[in-house]
Image 1 (spheres, rainbow, N blue to C red):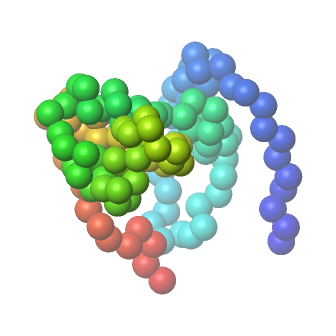
Image 2: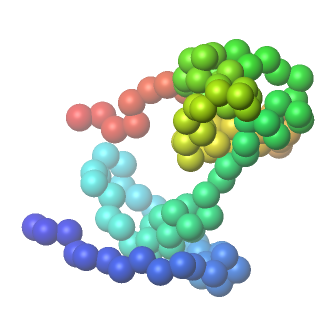
Length: 135
């Protein structure tokens, strides 16, 4: 069955959060192992929020905020130290960090800032390497 076509328009954060709160009060629990999960209005709103409000932090800002090495930044961004060194070297023409690199740094900043306040279940989902879907 073909997927229905959707048209994406920018989304207002406050309106989206209000609607998500309303939908959360009506939400029925998902049936385990009932893949694929349907994309309801809730999921569509979350996808649009994520798509239009990208999380990001520059390597320079992260480096100024935290006492890390460029090798640490490479580990966080899943890239080479050579790549990170290029981001900081203004005399060389190097590729800028990708949206993925910026997202990794923003998530790491969030974890470093707020680790103790994050529920254990969420940390497990963020940090454990395991298959999410079992065939």
